[in-house]
Length: 197
Image 1 (cartoon, rainbow, N blue to C red):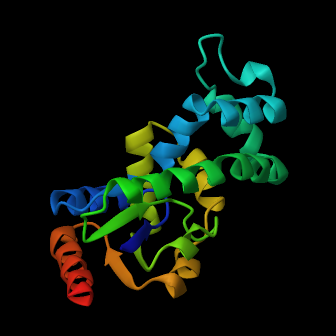
Image 2 (cartoon, rainbow, N blue to C red):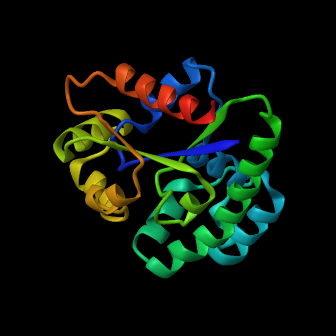
């Protein structure tokens, strides 16, 4: 089965692109959503997070204090690496299970913000990079998450810039203001199906 990775900077429109793939009956694995669930539901992962970031990183009800964790890792590269080393293997395992659950799909899609940075791209056959102008990405994230420009720029600084993602791309989707996403996704969809036939 062909595994297609979808990546791009924050606010580029990865999720919108993936919703179109879902509408085309292609199963989509959202790595970032999965990572959030694992950090709360996988007891082994929870234990490791507590050991490395303190028991009080979770509320007594078992909710992860994401804001506090973000502040800890965004200001300390070594802590970010520790967190990634805890979460990524569990996400990889979840993706393998996702693949097993979808044996009849022509191909599956994995959406991940740090597909290239984490090395997860090595487990995909094709990579789609979604691009958008920086100004639009900042505006989208500010509107979506209700955060200030400074916070968006801080998040962006932790990701590869678009030009570093491009050499990995088999396909590029342009998502600037007014761009038509549907035809671009359908073209890629047919291209992958043609390869399979």
